[in-house]
Image (cartoon, rainbow, N blue to C red; front, side, top):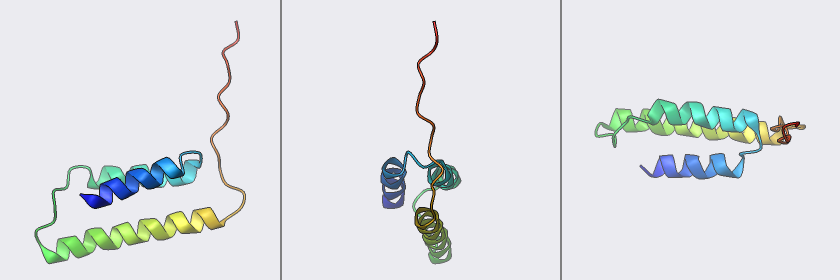
Length: 77
């Protein structure tokens, strides 16, 4: 499914933003076991959910400051 590739690429692009990565991960889990929609209503539903997720990503990226992952620390010896 092309949508999964787009979501994965978008997640990689925003991997430093926890809010976006989490949102995209949740959506990927929702569609993980779906096959290609055969019913037009089902296809419309999935596309609608995808569009809503992209709008949420846009909303998050337009806000300042972003919730970024903390820099990894080296373990103390």
